Length: 240
Image (cartoon, rainbow, N blue to C red; front, side, top):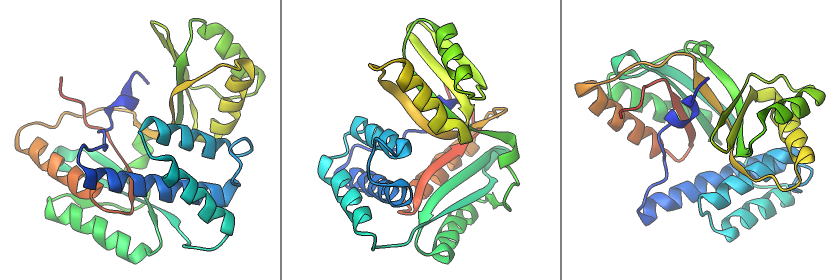
């Protein structure tokens, strides 16, 4: 799979307004995961991973605590996952994951981003079959064989393991995320994950250049500005 997981554009912005949007997206996702799987991070590995990721992205503790308290109350908004797929500039493929309390509004907002940039929104499955839906866990280590053994003993269907210098990266099907993380944590009490997420990894990359590259930047910026958009995945080869 290579280092393809790094290809997603970093949505963290430097302005206070942009940070507020990032905090809002984290708060919404923490709320949904806590409400679905429980508010205790020790018993909800997805929640624990998301909290760790939020802290690394410098999300304030009060944002995290507020989202968990909201889930604890059991009321509040009812968000649902919405996923949209389509084709961007230069024929690249795009997947947009959203959390929404109004699917009609979110679809219309996403569709506007496509149409304003001469892109084509597709039906479910139109491009996702060209991506691997993978759990990615990266951590410091120097013995990938021992890591593989621990994962196999836990019956994790490992897709790939990479070791580069002192960093080990494990790729597994998204459905094995919790099982893989638990196996790694149990085999190493002091493990600290530098990457801990589920992504769509493109099976093939495409080059987008010239005017198409400019349109792509505008397209991705418009999508990132939508409150309901949580993640954007694409198969565009990064510019060096």
